[in-house]
Length: 176
Image 1 (cartoon, rainbow, N blue to C red):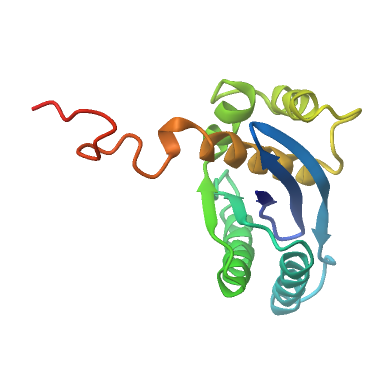
Image 2: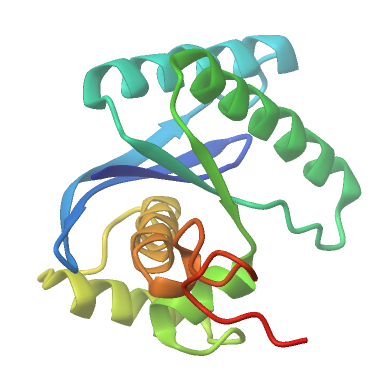
C-alpha cells in the first residue's frame, strides 16, 4: 500500500510517501509544497491544487492521510490553512484517492505511543521506525511522514479492520 501523508498548511504543505506492507514501512519520498508570501490567496490556493494534482498523478497513492485542523491562537491563519486543506481534500477526491483524517494526538499516539508526546519525540520515532539516518526535512515533511506512518500503523491494526470490532459481525460475540 502506498500512503501519501499530508501536513496541511498555507505557506508550506508537507508531504511524505510511504510504502507499507507486511507490517513494514519504507519512506519513498518526502518534501514540501511552498507558496510565495505576498501572493493573493486565490493564486496560492491554485498553486497548492496544481502541485497536489501533480503529486497524486505521479505517485498514485492507495490512500491519503491528512492531519485534522488544530486551531491555535491565530484564527486568521487557521482560516487560511482550512482553505488550503479544502483544496487538498478536493484534489484527492477528484483523483479517487481514499482520504483518512487523523488528529494530532492520534498521530502522536500511533507513532510515539503517547498522545501528548513532544514534537522531538515523534520525530525521533519517525527516524527510528523507518530506519532513517536523519529526521526528514523540512519539519512539515517530517510531520507528513508521521501522518502517513500513523495511517500505516492504524489501518493495519486489528481494531481498524472494517468489521473487526463491530458487534454482530461474528468475529466477536455480542453480549446482551
